[in-house]
Length: 220
Image 1 (spheres, rainbow, N blue to C red):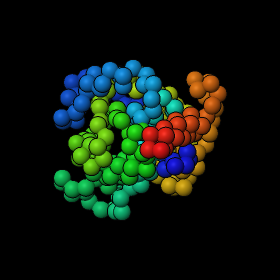
Image 2: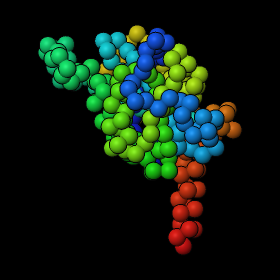
Image 3: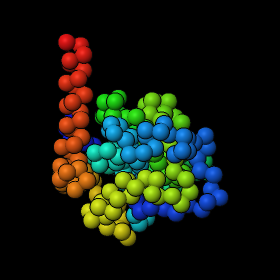
Image 4: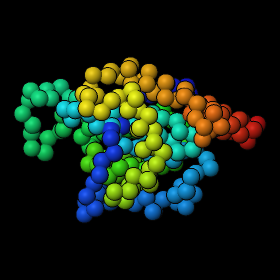
């Protein structure tokens, strides 16, 4: 698999503490202990939306150990702003629950199973179809506590870097899937002090290669 990855998400959103969050969620405290701390093995991801003007958005999914990032392209649906919305109908902004579920599943389906241990998400409504996502992908979804962005610190820090490419107060729909893929590559090619000045792509591929070699040794 190439470290360039597919091209998915907005500023941190403060959710009122009385918000119960998506139904049937797995709270971040319910993650297995080794996933609650900084994981030793890659495969646990943090996700969120970068939000822009006119209800535009890009999804972000960041691997906690290697800082490897994948961006989810969320284009608006045909008829946005020109077609009257239908009560209980599909969202046209590009990040309705089903659209988000499908886009996230497509993005993470490019990864080998050992690198998709879990996803921890913000408490936004866009991920309310998480149960279907888990059924379809086998990837468990957990949610942070209200007003607790530090529980997804890696994702928050990465979103700060992404704002260098996708400034606040801009319409994020102006960036095409090709643009988003280029940003993904650029971000994953930036050396990080926390990785011993390796890039996220290098750290991610090193682990991927090590697991493939271990598999060959086991079956050899």
